[in-house]
Length: 426
Image 1 (tube, rainbow, N blue to C red):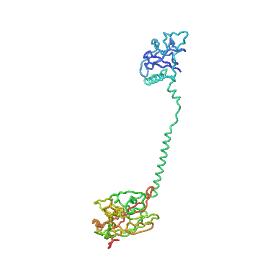
Image 2 (image 1 turned 45 degrees about the horizontal axis):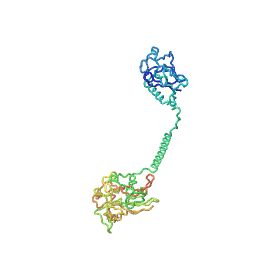
Image 3 (image 1 turned 90 degrees about the horizontal axis):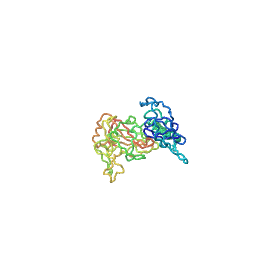
Image 4 (image 1 turned 60 degrees about the vertical axis):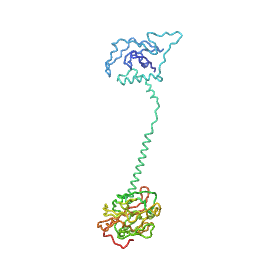
């Protein structure tokens, strides 16, 4: 269908008209002036409009309250003086006999850029003013035709891929959570004092990785749970180690300093705890005790190491008063006699804390308090209950998916009546 362009007789702007509306009254989409559209003959020339145009019935007012004048009461309007690209009706062109009349080319829908602009302008104007559709509204839409001819694109796969990715992740996370819960229910939770990392000492046991564990005074004095406590003469098992407290005695012990052949006795008596230790595992070898566990430590002195877990406390629950470690200063074997160290390695004579137990083997050993610290003498005058906390190696412990060498803290309950005098330690 062809589209013709005319200038409005009022605002001189172009109007795009389809051939179905030639010779009829129409309203300018720009200035709203009603005018008669001329006819076009087969040669492309403008013809005179009908002498008696059919009056269009217009409402008194539109939605924008614009007052229209009845078309029948008004005088016939003159035809537009400028019609492009056709000549006026009053002055027909003179054509020679041997020349063919020039016919203005019609603008087709598929290559008329100006027609697209006019149609869009008219549609916007109608949307703003809210008037009834004009005759040219039924003209074919270039953009509509192009949209109908556009091939349908394929559906996006982004949403299905995202959905299945999230579904797979949720299934995997649920499976891992179930596995963790099953393992926790199978083995049961351990108390913090049952898996203290075994990271220092002369005989660290079976090591797979180097771990540095720094404890503080508050952690070392944490309350020992009931299942980790025992009494004199009652055996207790923790991990692969069985511990039996044999006796609590009062005696003077001697400290042997590296480089000297004779041990030096402490200034005052020490409290001594005798133990029987047995390795009950089938395939593990470890040293139950260590000089590092019962090293000398004072709270007010400058200590390069944290407080030991081995100590004697007043009371069996929250410590009323604590006495840490023993009388010997600890130094790693790697530094003993080295030029890098200005200190000497010290051990308690006959303490026997560095013996390695094979599966099924057992041994006797003892721990003691610091006889060079006068404050420890308050132990012998205390009449209430006391608890001797000692750190021991317990073998390998399953933590997550790995086995790590670990230690534990057990408590031996005793009182003043359990302390027996003895002439000498050992």
